[in-house]
Image (tube, rainbow over all chains, first blue to last red; front, side, top):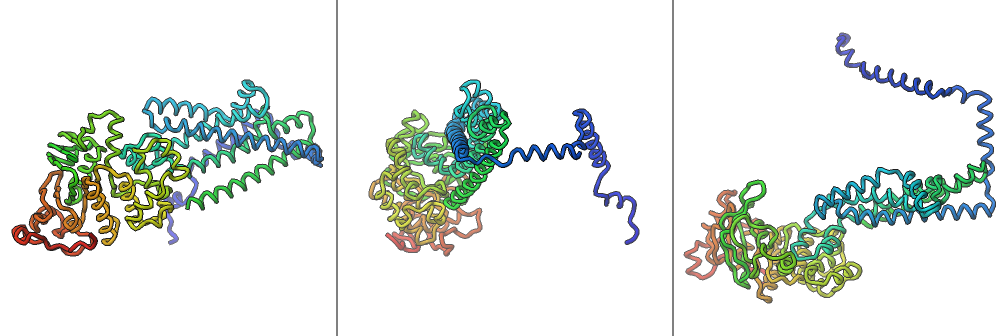
Length: 270
Length: 280
């Protein structure tokens, strides 16, 4: 009992030599980064900077809750909501359309081509699409809607294609063998198998897109984001803070609604 | 002529031979059971008749045409005339029974009718009538994932009855049903075939069901036809031979021992000793 060999002691040690080396190099890299960027974290803790921070935060209060401004925020929130809803809806429709060839229904060439297109749409972030769309379509909600629709089409198209590929084939085959035309085979034999998944994916992306739509305004694509960017540029901190609160409220409400809808969906499905 | 197979052979993609030199010709209105041990090729044979797989060798003619020489459009029209009951009903779980039954006519209806039917059923009386024949009328608007295996199998049968095909094929159509419902279902398939004068071919694992209901019985083993006899001529010896490789017990639907008179005696008496039909 008392005789524990050296080899055993070595095994008992939960941390290996490479782990120590890895940890050490991590510390070195972090230190080097601070040095390279000439950041001095200690400056955060001086009395002077504490004063500055206090001042900075204080300037955001009280938020501007005047009826006039609240009305403008309401409009902005509605715009954000509309951008995300229309963007997601367009993306769901376009995604389903592209998912058909991407799931290999029209041969290998069509499959690779649409997969490439979907990957391209998906790999360009929403913010970059928004910046491009502002250049193409001008400032405003239209650019934001297009940006969300483009990126989300890539995401949903890919997910839908995978759902379609993984759906059991027997129901569709049986209909093919009873002489049904291809489109009807799809709506009677395949779509019922995947709709719950398609709806769940779309709702999830909509939820994400509402959060995204609040940010897209920063590049001029409309909604609450654009208001926030405008107020911050003019150093209107009170107004900016009410916009930030509105964003927070919007996201909380949407999360709750989405969870509620999905629960209903599951109940209807179960 | 319902169908004609000459020297049909089938080799699966993995090189395994499923059927060998099957020659069979069947005139309209016949009712045929295919029996044999599992893996004998019953399903493969039915799938060739259903034009879902193309045989590797030999000639097929179904409802007076060679399915593999038809254009895509003509093949669709031929397939709309062939009804297949699958062993595992190929129905999406979330589909309602009525929609699953209506799907039997997708090959016959104009597409807009089928499409609108997803919003409001184009025909309610028809599916209800077919489901009523199978004692399922109360499940008309039920979702298929709320049904039991035997109920789902009957939905599959109702779909094919609703299709009104000129050739009725059934692959183990009653495998998930209790004996009483199995009898009811086979009886309905028979009366459909009889009243419309179409051919019914069913593969069955329960020998007693085959002998009780089908005038002509084909025994299949290892991809070859071992016997093709009127049911009255199917003797105990022939059956033991067919299932020789299995346990020595003849498979029946409720695992009751099956007694069949030797062929000579049966011929003398002109009848067979099997459990009498419960429903006719």
